[in-house]
Image (tube, rainbow, N blue to C red; front, side, top):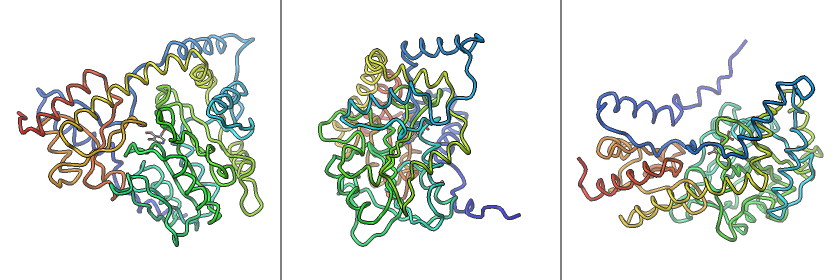
Length: 397
Ligand code: PLP
């Protein structure tokens, strides 16, 4: 027996664990200080009534012999597959039911999809980006290349000629930078992937935050994407399902490599290793996509948007460069005075008692930047803005 030595390529501590550890250490040394957390990408508003109602009903069904259900179909119940299809129709995209695979969330599939590709495939990752893509490919022993997001390219890197990759991860709207690709910009990636014979894994976990015309909500808005892209999506940020767990992955029928359908490979993989997302979660997700569910969710989304707008106003007023906030719950700000991400984290924690996420935790390209989240409560967000202003104006306690 030999262990997977690739685990030694992983950094010891997951970013949010380290943020939590440092925050807890400060908090226990200063119990009198109230710390405001604008760090974790978790939601704070409760599930909307339409979702709660559907989930209660689902639990009731499970309580009676005549309506009880056991294992869910491994690719998802038809009622949810059809609701997801209708949601795509609203975006002008038509999908077959067997192209959609219901999951327990985007993170699992971001990792598990890696099983479709050989260990010697080369992976291209944006930098900075959600750390899970890197970790899973390091564990699989793959070679990883980076496509650097910078202030100059608006944190939206474009494909580079002469760089070869087999698997390309894209995340738009991006975590952590909040930057979102236009259809034209995504079109460049689709052309590049087709030219390389590569496959794009497009993480659309934040698609529901897009509101600007011309910004893509799905990679399938781009012509040709059905032959080169897999889309991963989630109800976590859209509908507050971070604790409920439900998402889905789309693999078009046209997506083939080496004469093999990736859709059929994934169907086989899921039937071998996945026993389905819970009935209660899927009924909740169906309700989130219903007309009433979407109306109620848009009210929650408005509240997060208002928080993002408050943070943007605050940073704008202080003259701090930032991206994101418009089509994303995240605001990506530049650290002041050339400070590195962790030093700024420490200063803000100690002087303003505000916690954000150090940009370098999302890749080397994030050094010198800092992520703020709009998922906090309104009161906390407004107070955090006041404290940020006091910090910048040198008036901290
Ligand atoms: N993808 C991105 C880009 C994320 O930021 C997150 C969570 O923060 C996820 C996926 C995970 O989503 P889920 O809760 O559906 O697993």
